[in-house]
Image (cartoon, rainbow, N blue to C red; front, side, top):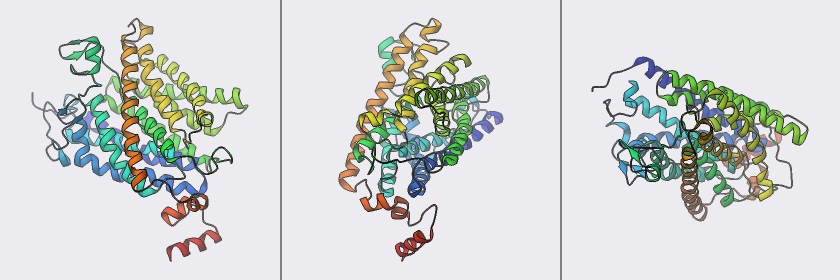
Length: 435
């Protein structure tokens, strides 16, 4: 059957791609406001650097490794669509059934790879060399993100195909696993993946100087609130765009994204109020992101009431989880683990309970829950092991950390030769550095 262009669906995917791309600069505001004033530019540059590195790699071999012909169930053939030049619009292209050109589908998926890498940077704020980060971004997206995305979405072993883990556990019918894993827009591929990577890097690089002994408060909470608002706006492209068409599935994802986020924000604020006596703006912003993360894998699998329940659970658990770094002594600077890893796990696993078609609470039995736990654990192990190898190699070769003087004096000035908020004294130092 020949490809037939659907201009409405194509317009929606182009719009969604633009919305998701906006999420990375939004993340730069969100993360930038959360760090100290001497680190804000470096923090924002890590997000922008991810755009530069991953955007190029995606076009060259990333799309091919994600959606190319399967190799051992782990990754796609990296040369099949090298440079995107061989992409054609036919019945087998990525969103051909929705009438969306292959190049548009490829552009939409590029934005997911970009934001996933950028998310990791929050775990290592205030202490990582910019050059080391850029090298990590290119290697990690190639060896971790592309393969995991292929395994889940591209026909690999964590998907619904007859050669996948789900098929091995529960069998197949007409080439499809009888109980198919559900990751609508990236609970495993994006959030669990980034959360685990952030935890591993935080352990490899070590704590910031003064962590747990001196206050490291956000320097600009309006930036944090602005970033959260823009992330929420962009997330409609992330989730509703993942329907692949402007249809009722996109509408359900849009509504679920809204109400889950509202519930998570309210639950986070309530948790703060009961625990600390205050409902904070940082808590509101963090609750927004926690809800967005949790609903991502489940956006088309639950109904709006289920989305509210899922968001509320995520808001409470993520609010509690962000304090674990003090109990266990790892310095996840901006709570990538507490929000993205925990939120991604909550959203992925609760599909097994709240999914309207196969969830346990809707009479579907325990099978979907088992599959969701299996794919979540597989993502944790895969991302954790490979991230450790990549991070350790960078540590022993080029080194991760800036000098102690640079960390104390300001990583912005040391790494970029500039500061966000320049005083007269800082101006003299900058001139000396540039001279």
